[in-house]
Length: 252
Ligand code: NI
Image (tube, rainbow, N blue to C red; front, side, top):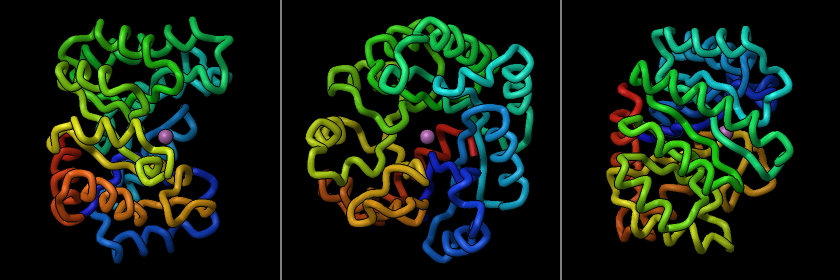
């Protein structure tokens, strides 16, 4: 019943026991997983996984932290993967000023290139916004009608309202279970149920009580449990509703 709309199953952290992890997911009621790419290599790996496993779909994209492998050819090759029958989005793309704020203009240029490609072809996008809220919001505003999700949303409630008004979805991850999660919980409270998607960002960001371990999509239930608590609902209801939202957003 769970749909993890953001898990890097192609990551090397799963190389040793990927098959076992995949089997376990199905036993853990994980119905679908979307694996977003970060560059050409990982987008291709994600496509391969989607070909191998029925319940996996993928997104192709160039992450702002991957500028080093960016070239006209590699970007073109990533975008051409959107023609793959199991590719359901462009992502993850966006701006990251946390790790590196010395290439802001290159990051913005790359973000624009992928957003306009998505807009022209009506493909949903998965946005990574870390410490770049103002610029991300200003840029997506230039593409009205574009559909997508702000993955692992970390902006203010005010920015969330603006995005929701424009039709965007918000992604919630392990950090909603952390002690210092005040802002994310405020955003959850104002986010209508039909605009929430849940993500693990595996192998990163394990939720409580799995912190310190490798994250995988079976931990989605801890995130759904926290959301259920905030929304005064049940895990089952939240899992069902967020899976439905994911299917609508990504056209599955
Ligand atoms: Ni990610």
